[in-house]
Image 1 (spheres, rainbow, N blue to C red):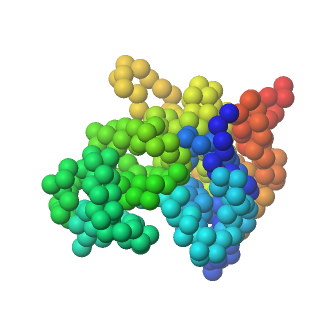
Image 2: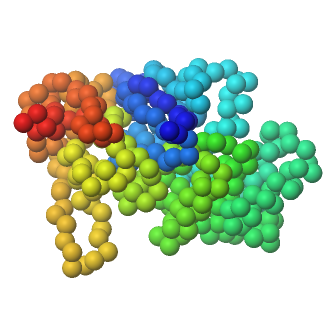
Image 3: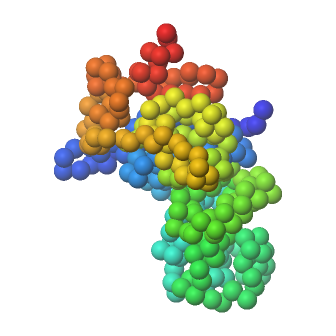
Length: 319
Protein backbone atom coordinates (compact mmCIF):
# COMPACT_ATOMS: atom_id res chain seq x y z
CA UNK A 1 0.00 0.00 0.00
CA UNK A 2 1.34 3.42 -1.02
CA UNK A 3 2.48 5.78 1.70
CA UNK A 4 0.30 8.82 2.38
CA UNK A 5 2.00 11.98 1.11
CA UNK A 6 -0.58 14.57 2.17
CA UNK A 7 -3.52 14.50 4.57
CA UNK A 8 -5.95 17.37 5.01
CA UNK A 9 -8.46 17.37 7.86
CA UNK A 10 -11.43 19.75 8.06
CA UNK A 11 -9.49 22.55 6.35
CA UNK A 12 -11.07 26.02 6.47
CA UNK A 13 -10.32 29.46 5.09
CA UNK A 14 -12.56 32.44 5.86
CA UNK A 15 -11.99 35.93 4.48
CA UNK A 16 -13.33 38.97 6.31
CA UNK A 17 -15.60 41.16 4.16
CA UNK A 18 -17.83 44.15 4.99
CA UNK A 19 -20.81 41.78 4.82
CA UNK A 20 -19.31 39.10 7.06
CA UNK A 21 -17.02 36.07 6.73
CA UNK A 22 -16.63 34.61 3.25
CA UNK A 23 -16.28 30.83 3.55
CA UNK A 24 -13.87 30.14 0.68
CA UNK A 25 -12.90 26.67 1.96
CA UNK A 26 -15.16 25.13 4.57
CA UNK A 27 -14.39 21.76 6.15
CA UNK A 28 -12.48 19.99 3.36
CA UNK A 29 -10.79 16.65 4.11
CA UNK A 30 -8.83 14.25 1.88
CA UNK A 31 -5.63 12.21 1.58
CA UNK A 32 -3.20 11.74 -1.31
CA UNK A 33 -0.96 8.71 -1.67
CA UNK A 34 2.64 9.11 -2.73
CA UNK A 35 3.04 9.20 -6.51
CA UNK A 36 -0.66 9.84 -7.23
CA UNK A 37 -2.67 12.76 -8.57
CA UNK A 38 -5.72 14.19 -6.84
CA UNK A 39 -7.90 16.16 -9.23
CA UNK A 40 -9.91 19.03 -7.74
CA UNK A 41 -12.70 20.20 -10.03
CA UNK A 42 -15.54 22.70 -9.82
CA UNK A 43 -16.88 26.00 -11.10
CA UNK A 44 -14.88 29.22 -10.90
CA UNK A 45 -15.10 30.60 -7.37
CA UNK A 46 -15.67 27.22 -5.68
CA UNK A 47 -12.46 27.53 -3.64
CA UNK A 48 -10.25 25.01 -5.43
CA UNK A 49 -7.32 27.41 -6.01
CA UNK A 50 -7.61 28.69 -2.43
CA UNK A 51 -7.42 25.07 -1.26
CA UNK A 52 -4.13 24.56 -3.10
CA UNK A 53 -2.65 27.74 -1.66
CA UNK A 54 -3.65 26.78 1.87
CA UNK A 55 -1.82 23.47 1.60
CA UNK A 56 1.34 25.32 0.51
CA UNK A 57 0.98 28.05 3.16
CA UNK A 58 0.60 30.76 0.55
CA UNK A 59 -2.50 31.69 2.57
CA UNK A 60 -3.02 31.50 6.31
CA UNK A 61 -5.25 28.65 7.50
CA UNK A 62 -8.40 29.56 9.46
CA UNK A 63 -9.00 26.07 10.81
CA UNK A 64 -8.23 22.39 10.31
CA UNK A 65 -5.02 20.41 9.96
CA UNK A 66 -2.51 19.70 7.18
CA UNK A 67 -0.08 16.77 7.43
CA UNK A 68 2.79 16.35 4.96
CA UNK A 69 4.58 12.99 5.03
CA UNK A 70 3.05 12.37 8.46
CA UNK A 71 4.24 15.70 9.88
CA UNK A 72 1.79 18.34 11.10
CA UNK A 73 2.59 21.48 9.07
CA UNK A 74 -0.54 23.44 9.96
CA UNK A 75 1.47 26.06 11.86
CA UNK A 76 5.14 26.46 10.99
CA UNK A 77 7.75 29.16 11.56
CA UNK A 78 9.69 30.89 8.80
CA UNK A 79 12.67 28.53 8.96
CA UNK A 80 10.42 25.46 8.67
CA UNK A 81 8.47 27.06 5.84
CA UNK A 82 11.70 27.65 3.90
CA UNK A 83 12.52 23.95 4.31
CA UNK A 84 9.04 22.97 3.12
CA UNK A 85 9.48 25.07 -0.02
CA UNK A 86 12.13 22.58 -1.13
CA UNK A 87 9.60 19.74 -0.95
CA UNK A 88 6.35 21.48 -1.95
CA UNK A 89 5.95 23.67 -5.04
CA UNK A 90 3.29 25.14 -7.34
CA UNK A 91 2.70 25.57 -11.07
CA UNK A 92 0.56 28.63 -11.70
CA UNK A 93 -2.31 28.98 -14.15
CA UNK A 94 -1.06 31.82 -16.36
CA UNK A 95 2.51 31.18 -17.55
CA UNK A 96 2.86 34.77 -18.74
CA UNK A 97 1.88 36.68 -15.61
CA UNK A 98 3.72 34.25 -13.31
CA UNK A 99 7.07 34.96 -15.01
CA UNK A 100 9.16 38.10 -14.63
CA UNK A 101 9.21 39.72 -18.12
CA UNK A 102 12.74 41.08 -17.43
CA UNK A 103 14.20 37.64 -16.74
CA UNK A 104 15.50 35.35 -19.46
CA UNK A 105 14.55 31.68 -19.50
CA UNK A 106 17.75 30.58 -17.79
CA UNK A 107 17.56 33.34 -15.16
CA UNK A 108 13.93 32.54 -14.34
CA UNK A 109 14.72 28.85 -13.86
CA UNK A 110 17.81 29.66 -11.82
CA UNK A 111 15.97 31.96 -9.38
CA UNK A 112 14.82 29.23 -6.92
CA UNK A 113 18.35 27.81 -6.91
CA UNK A 114 19.84 31.22 -6.17
CA UNK A 115 17.41 31.77 -3.30
CA UNK A 116 18.31 28.33 -1.95
CA UNK A 117 22.00 29.40 -2.13
CA UNK A 118 23.26 26.78 -4.54
CA UNK A 119 26.81 27.29 -5.84
CA UNK A 120 27.08 29.13 -9.15
CA UNK A 121 28.71 26.19 -10.95
CA UNK A 122 25.94 23.88 -9.77
CA UNK A 123 23.22 26.36 -10.83
CA UNK A 124 24.36 26.51 -14.46
CA UNK A 125 24.44 22.73 -14.77
CA UNK A 126 21.10 22.32 -13.03
CA UNK A 127 19.42 24.90 -15.28
CA UNK A 128 20.57 23.04 -18.39
CA UNK A 129 19.31 19.77 -16.92
CA UNK A 130 15.91 21.28 -16.14
CA UNK A 131 15.55 22.78 -19.61
CA UNK A 132 16.27 19.39 -21.16
CA UNK A 133 13.85 17.68 -18.76
CA UNK A 134 10.90 19.90 -19.71
CA UNK A 135 11.73 20.04 -23.43
CA UNK A 136 13.23 23.52 -23.78
CA UNK A 137 16.04 23.82 -26.35
CA UNK A 138 19.39 25.27 -25.22
CA UNK A 139 19.05 28.07 -27.80
CA UNK A 140 16.14 29.49 -25.76
CA UNK A 141 18.26 30.10 -22.65
CA UNK A 142 18.66 33.84 -23.30
CA UNK A 143 15.17 34.55 -24.65
CA UNK A 144 12.46 36.41 -22.73
CA UNK A 145 8.90 35.21 -21.96
CA UNK A 146 7.26 37.53 -24.51
CA UNK A 147 9.31 35.88 -27.26
CA UNK A 148 7.85 32.44 -26.52
CA UNK A 149 4.47 30.79 -27.01
CA UNK A 150 2.25 29.72 -24.11
CA UNK A 151 3.43 26.11 -24.12
CA UNK A 152 7.10 27.05 -23.80
CA UNK A 153 6.30 29.59 -21.09
CA UNK A 154 4.47 26.92 -19.11
CA UNK A 155 7.47 24.62 -19.51
CA UNK A 156 9.52 27.33 -17.79
CA UNK A 157 7.00 27.32 -14.94
CA UNK A 158 7.28 23.54 -14.65
CA UNK A 159 11.09 23.73 -14.66
CA UNK A 160 11.02 26.32 -11.87
CA UNK A 161 8.73 24.09 -9.82
CA UNK A 162 11.13 21.16 -10.29
CA UNK A 163 14.29 23.13 -9.54
CA UNK A 164 14.61 22.14 -5.87
CA UNK A 165 13.59 18.49 -6.40
CA UNK A 166 10.19 18.67 -4.67
CA UNK A 167 8.07 15.63 -3.91
CA UNK A 168 4.69 17.37 -4.08
CA UNK A 169 3.37 19.96 -6.57
CA UNK A 170 0.11 21.89 -6.68
CA UNK A 171 -0.88 22.37 -10.33
CA UNK A 172 -3.27 25.33 -10.40
CA UNK A 173 -5.06 25.00 -13.77
CA UNK A 174 -1.72 24.70 -15.59
CA UNK A 175 -3.22 24.07 -19.04
CA UNK A 176 -6.39 26.20 -19.01
CA UNK A 177 -4.66 29.14 -20.75
CA UNK A 178 -3.22 26.95 -23.53
CA UNK A 179 -4.49 25.75 -26.90
CA UNK A 180 -5.90 22.22 -26.92
CA UNK A 181 -2.96 20.72 -28.83
CA UNK A 182 -0.48 22.35 -26.43
CA UNK A 183 -2.57 21.18 -23.47
CA UNK A 184 -2.01 17.58 -24.53
CA UNK A 185 1.76 18.11 -24.73
CA UNK A 186 1.93 19.65 -21.24
CA UNK A 187 -0.30 16.96 -19.70
CA UNK A 188 1.83 14.20 -21.22
CA UNK A 189 4.97 15.95 -19.95
CA UNK A 190 3.54 16.14 -16.43
CA UNK A 191 2.61 12.47 -16.47
CA UNK A 192 6.10 11.52 -17.68
CA UNK A 193 7.69 13.63 -14.95
CA UNK A 194 5.46 12.04 -12.33
CA UNK A 195 6.54 8.57 -13.42
CA UNK A 196 10.24 9.46 -13.68
CA UNK A 197 10.55 11.53 -10.49
CA UNK A 198 7.84 9.94 -8.31
CA UNK A 199 5.93 13.23 -7.97
CA UNK A 200 2.61 13.69 -6.19
CA UNK A 201 0.15 16.23 -7.62
CA UNK A 202 -2.93 18.18 -6.69
CA UNK A 203 -4.32 19.03 -10.12
CA UNK A 204 -6.83 21.90 -10.02
CA UNK A 205 -9.06 22.41 -13.05
CA UNK A 206 -12.59 23.15 -14.24
CA UNK A 207 -12.24 20.83 -17.25
CA UNK A 208 -13.75 17.41 -16.58
CA UNK A 209 -12.03 15.81 -19.59
CA UNK A 210 -8.61 16.96 -18.37
CA UNK A 211 -9.18 15.82 -14.79
CA UNK A 212 -10.30 12.40 -15.99
CA UNK A 213 -7.16 11.99 -18.09
CA UNK A 214 -4.58 12.90 -15.44
CA UNK A 215 -6.12 12.08 -12.04
CA UNK A 216 -6.12 8.93 -9.94
CA UNK A 217 -8.78 10.34 -7.60
CA UNK A 218 -11.15 13.29 -7.98
CA UNK A 219 -12.75 15.73 -5.54
CA UNK A 220 -15.73 17.80 -6.72
CA UNK A 221 -15.99 21.19 -4.96
CA UNK A 222 -18.90 23.60 -4.72
CA UNK A 223 -18.84 26.86 -2.74
CA UNK A 224 -15.97 25.77 -0.51
CA UNK A 225 -17.15 22.23 0.26
CA UNK A 226 -16.61 18.76 -1.17
CA UNK A 227 -19.76 17.25 -2.70
CA UNK A 228 -18.26 14.05 -4.10
CA UNK A 229 -14.93 12.22 -3.86
CA UNK A 230 -13.99 9.00 -5.66
CA UNK A 231 -11.39 7.25 -7.82
CA UNK A 232 -11.38 8.76 -11.31
CA UNK A 233 -12.77 5.76 -13.16
CA UNK A 234 -15.44 5.15 -10.51
CA UNK A 235 -16.64 8.75 -10.62
CA UNK A 236 -17.17 8.69 -14.37
CA UNK A 237 -18.77 5.24 -14.42
CA UNK A 238 -21.19 5.79 -11.52
CA UNK A 239 -21.87 9.38 -10.52
CA UNK A 240 -24.11 10.09 -7.53
CA UNK A 241 -24.30 13.79 -6.78
CA UNK A 242 -26.67 15.87 -8.98
CA UNK A 243 -24.02 18.58 -9.34
CA UNK A 244 -21.37 16.13 -10.53
CA UNK A 245 -23.85 14.66 -13.02
CA UNK A 246 -24.45 18.15 -14.43
CA UNK A 247 -20.72 18.73 -14.80
CA UNK A 248 -20.24 15.44 -16.62
CA UNK A 249 -23.13 16.17 -18.96
CA UNK A 250 -21.26 19.25 -20.22
CA UNK A 251 -18.37 17.19 -21.66
CA UNK A 252 -18.29 17.30 -25.45
CA UNK A 253 -18.34 13.93 -27.17
CA UNK A 254 -15.95 13.25 -30.10
CA UNK A 255 -18.72 11.46 -32.05
CA UNK A 256 -21.18 13.96 -33.56
CA UNK A 257 -23.76 11.19 -33.98
CA UNK A 258 -23.70 10.32 -30.30
CA UNK A 259 -25.90 12.46 -28.09
CA UNK A 260 -25.77 13.07 -24.37
CA UNK A 261 -28.60 14.59 -22.39
CA UNK A 262 -27.43 17.97 -21.11
CA UNK A 263 -28.36 18.71 -17.50
CA UNK A 264 -28.86 22.45 -17.05
CA UNK A 265 -28.32 23.92 -13.58
CA UNK A 266 -30.84 26.66 -12.95
CA UNK A 267 -31.10 29.20 -10.17
CA UNK A 268 -28.58 31.50 -8.51
CA UNK A 269 -25.56 30.64 -6.41
CA UNK A 270 -26.00 30.71 -2.65
CA UNK A 271 -23.96 33.38 -0.92
CA UNK A 272 -20.67 32.09 0.55
CA UNK A 273 -20.76 34.96 3.06
CA UNK A 274 -22.06 33.75 6.43
CA UNK A 275 -23.76 30.73 4.77
CA UNK A 276 -26.80 29.30 6.49
CA UNK A 277 -27.00 25.61 7.50
CA UNK A 278 -28.02 23.26 4.74
CA UNK A 279 -26.72 22.03 1.41
CA UNK A 280 -25.20 24.91 -0.55
CA UNK A 281 -26.36 23.40 -3.82
CA UNK A 282 -29.99 22.90 -2.75
CA UNK A 283 -31.33 26.14 -4.31
CA UNK A 284 -30.16 24.90 -7.73
CA UNK A 285 -30.90 21.18 -7.27
CA UNK A 286 -33.93 19.56 -8.90
CA UNK A 287 -34.02 16.92 -6.13
CA UNK A 288 -33.98 19.37 -3.24
CA UNK A 289 -35.95 18.40 -0.12
CA UNK A 290 -36.99 20.47 2.88
CA UNK A 291 -34.23 18.81 4.85
CA UNK A 292 -31.63 20.00 2.32
CA UNK A 293 -32.19 23.63 3.27
CA UNK A 294 -31.98 22.96 7.00
CA UNK A 295 -29.21 20.40 7.53
CA UNK A 296 -25.74 20.35 5.97
CA UNK A 297 -25.15 16.86 4.49
CA UNK A 298 -22.03 15.03 5.67
CA UNK A 299 -19.57 13.53 3.21
CA UNK A 300 -20.36 9.83 3.62
CA UNK A 301 -19.12 6.66 1.95
CA UNK A 302 -21.78 5.16 -0.34
CA UNK A 303 -19.47 2.57 -1.90
CA UNK A 304 -15.89 1.56 -1.07
CA UNK A 305 -13.77 4.67 -1.70
CA UNK A 306 -16.73 6.68 -3.05
CA UNK A 307 -17.95 9.55 -0.84
CA UNK A 308 -20.97 11.81 -1.42
CA UNK A 309 -22.50 14.71 0.53
CA UNK A 310 -26.19 14.60 -0.44
CA UNK A 311 -29.42 13.91 1.48
CA UNK A 312 -31.17 12.76 -1.70
CA UNK A 313 -28.49 10.18 -2.48
CA UNK A 314 -28.63 8.94 1.11
CA UNK A 315 -32.41 8.45 0.85
CA UNK A 316 -32.15 6.60 -2.46
CA UNK A 317 -29.45 4.27 -1.13
CA UNK A 318 -31.56 3.54 1.95
CA UNK A 319 -34.47 2.27 -0.14
